[in-house]
Image 1: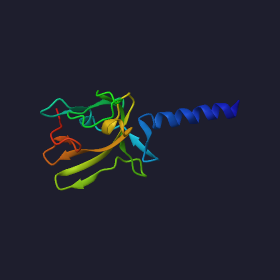
Image 2: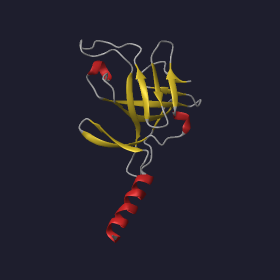
Image 3: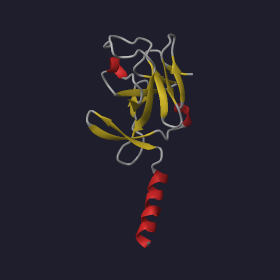
Length: 148
């Protein structure tokens, strides 16, 4: 009885501290990520065409290409439903890099729909959310996607 009670409390404590963390496999390696990020990162990133990226607070979203490219005939040309997470370092801090334009935050996006990245060739995409010195946000994989 004491052991099962202790185990229950331990699992509850772990669940409470990691509820917005998830492991996403990338290039055959498990990568710890989080969608517990500052509220400024949630929302829609869009540009002049029809493509966009939506990051929802619950760690889901949509990645919609503006140019689909060359895909096998079995690849449905559709928006990609995703689970996403910003990479974490060994101290459970969000990874970022200083750049000339500001900061860069690596993000993994995993397809959870029938359509996936690069013409259905990749289930997981590594991209970067860019924070410019003027405070605006953009997406590295698309020249003109900025946070609305």
